[in-house]
Length: 387
Image (cartoon, rainbow, N blue to C red; front, side):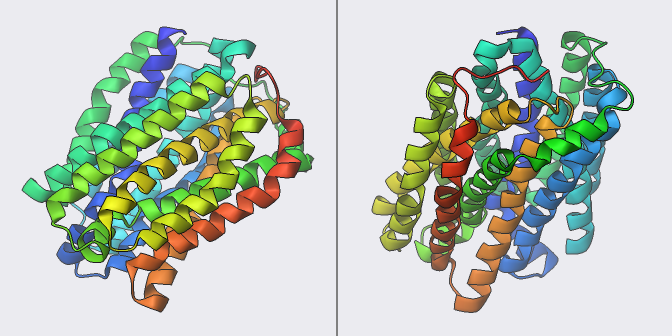
């Protein structure tokens, strides 16, 4: 695997830490800004909405840029947004900065996804995607729990500052490791890429991915209040629980990296059928962390294995759209990341309990089960280069 793929994964680690760390900061942000726990879900929803809009739009805008220049510009904007977020003094300013950071993140990830697919070649596309997404899962294992600890010791603003500091050296790594040339497309070729969306198989893959990610984020966003509220456990337990989820996510991406190129349909379908059962089991576990924790780990494994596989297959199905394929994948998964927390927050507001959130995840996961029969018709073995 080219070293450049790992360098891009390092950048994704910093961005993944930012995307996921709100799951451990919600109660402290709510207390500091004098807002409700449910309203802090807007920070995750806003970030995801920025990713949805930003993925195809930023990928299209950067389509004529050299890849190194595009990645550098997006990551620089991401750093600035997090420095500003560290001094935000109200919820809506913070939401706005989350959207800006997400736009930068979306552009970066969309370009990175197509870049690693091109660098790795047809037979290793699934593995390259898994390595890149390994940056996200490593963030779950290390970055997100570390963010929670920073917030407990020095306040939630320290977590945002740490993300900016973490991402800054990666700018140098990109300059050294990513080739200067390689613009994604020539002028006048965007129309055919947009027409790729007419393929109902691509739509089915995107819907499946959005549903899987929506179910994941619906519960993951509210881990901190689940730990302290539903389980009645001390706040310090939040970081280890987040690390456990991250370990499961890392394992899931590793599984996808091993099998997604050879058995994409089997992996995606079997995992999707399990997900509603698993989320319902987590809801059934209720206030028994000894039961809930193993289930949460398994859900992380399966969710990220299925999600990584679906991203890889999106790149295959949308191979006629080399510039926007990564943007389509990023946008779809962040539709889920926006809708999931929003539905979870709505459920909390209606039933006045965080305990209902896993049931909402189960409902979202059913959507993936329904859409996968169409999606699997487009699955490839092995993966096909997006170029």
